Length: 295
Image 1 (cartoon, rainbow, N blue to C red):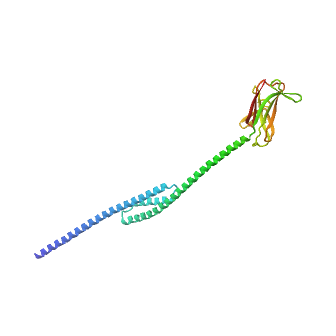
Image 2 (cartoon, rainbow, N blue to C red):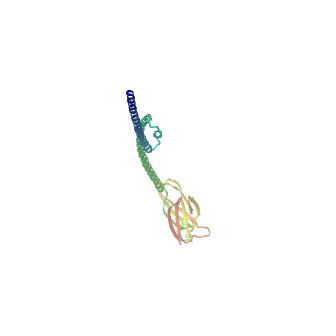
Image 3 (cartoon, rainbow, N blue to C red):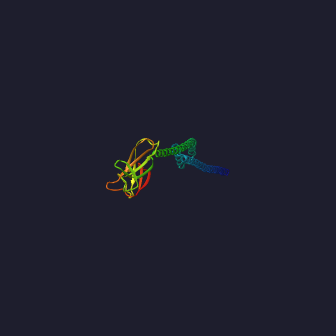
């Protein structure tokens, strides 16, 4: 009887120990599971934080690259390394060692970014200073060009004025009929039928700006029927053709020079009655004009 009681007591003690061990094991397992979940949650949160930090870093590089006018290979390469690290982090295991490695790489990239962006700001400042200097130089060049163009225009205008001022001019242009005696004596007349010649006289005016030497002017005499008298030859001046009666050639010595020229009546004809017009040309430029009447 006593032996049976001892056995029952031993069983109870053993069952109690087993129950304590079971409860302890269950509690420990539950604690491990809870710690694992908390660790995983913390790792996921820290991983997302690292991902956010890398994304912000990438945005800073994008802004710096966009602000840089010239292509900066260092910034582009660093931006590519960040993107590669982000892609690798997305598929990485949620472990302490793995996250530690990424945090270490992030810190290295952060230090590199600080150096690169500081250097980029320095280069950007130099470029802005250079651009300002270039703008100032361009303004000065533009002002110099305007001044030069203005000076060239003034010189051209002055040259034109001098050229115009140096051109030969005639004054006192007149024409009339003459009767020529066998002795050579000439008698002015206003009678068309009695005129043997038309006499054209003018004075080449004194002009110190005109170069002395042999000169020539074209004289055009037009009768009442609008015919060009005399030789009625032609000369071409670029796009202009001039019909002239005669060429008056003379030696000019920068002083007033009186000149008379003649138009002979055509054989077996007489001069027409009516209004006659005389034009004198210096090359293609009309320099004097006059009219007279033969009755």
